[in-house]
Image 1 (cartoon, helix red, strand yellow):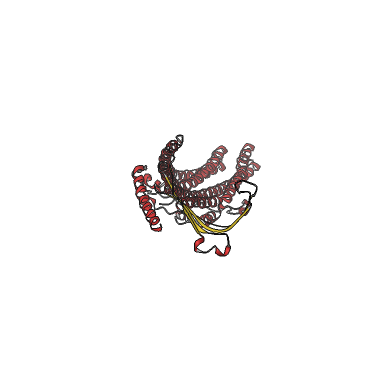
Image 2: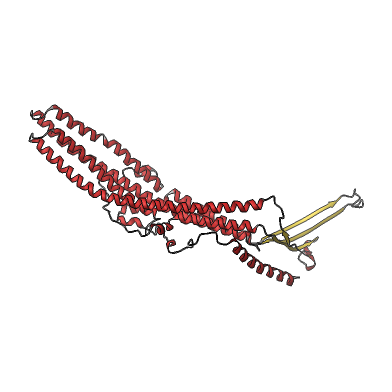
Amino acid sequence: MMRVLSLLFLSLFICAGTMAQRNDELIGNPLPQGWSEGEFFNQTMPPDDEWWKNFEDMVLDSLIVVACEKNYSVLVALENIKKAKAAWHKSQSGLMPDVGLNIGWQRAKTSGNTAQSLYKETWEGYYSVAASMKWQADIFGSIYMRAKAQKSLFMATEEEYNGVMVSLVANVAITYFSLREALAEMQVIRWNVESQREIMDIVVSRYDAGLASKLDVSQARSVYYSTMAKIPAMQATIDNYRNAMAVLLGIYPQELVGWLQEGYALPEYMEMLAVGVPAGLVRRRPDVRSAEREVEAYAALLGATKRDWFPQIYFSGTIGFASDELKRLPRHESLTWEIAPSISWAAFSGNERVNATREARATLDASILSFNNTVLTAIQEVENAMSLYKSSISQIVSLREAVNQNQETLTLSFELYKQGLTEFQNVLDAQRSLLEYQNYLVQAHGSSLIYLVKLYEALGGGW
């Protein structure tokens, strides 16, 4: 008997491998050509891919280290990976047999007032110990394909985690540079307040000496106080960026009170970067890779629905001992066993399996379309970031010259005003223009850094 069972199991395993291979050929490869992993899929992610260190800013480096350790979105992404991994291993358990152990004692009394008992009560009782096994032989690969789908979904969650890390690092850098930009704008405002206060004092002195009109004094004070009024709004902007940074770091905003005060200049980083072919580089992006993993998962699920059409083969059995006396339980004559192979084949299921296959195919087609859209969106983001970064550098060069010229205009107009050779209105116009263009320059400088960060993010990290 054991020899027959061994041959039966061996034949089933050989058949399983053959049929699984045949059904793989039946399903074919639903993925477009060129989707296999290649050189663009060797992406390393934060903190290994430390592209932000190109800015040579130790404060930014420290912030990113803290964010990668404490940010709650990262922690949630890690838990999602654990959940997906558990689901994958759970699906793999279907390939293994279920084994159980039953130990029991039974005592029963039969009524003596029934014809079946011949009007004589009887007592029955015995001890038992038995091991049971039930196993679905995955000959046609249905369970295997579902486990393969769960593995692809698990890999997709890993890519989602990588995407969270890339996005987090980019958001920390963007928030940091936005804060530095706001602090630089605050410096510009305070510098102009001081400059305008000095001019206002001179105009008041000239008015007291009868060399200027009261209109000049009023206009000088108007410009001074209007510039002063910009300080509270800019301080609120600075506080908002600090609060946003606290959330990214996974800490309370109170812990950043007083952090990074005025006096920090924006990094002088303006380089034209060669990033290669965006269409190839975007395939390193975690969202693109995650979408590809989802396509693989839905392709496997489609294969599983096709294999559900084949019969399902089960093996179940028990082996153990039973005896009415405990001391006789382990004896050879107390041995009991049972083996019960079975085949289940649903000949008709109300088109359930037909519609399940149709649903799986539609889901796969939708995931392929979603993948293509993700790639197009990624290329758009890269092109936009490259264009904005290049234009911002050109803008900075022009604005620097504009600031220099406005500074000279203010100096010359005020000297001419003191000599009585021009109206005070020219000085007022020069003051307003200088403040405006200084702010434009700071904003353009901050924007160029932010556009560069977005370019890194659009490319899925460094390159």
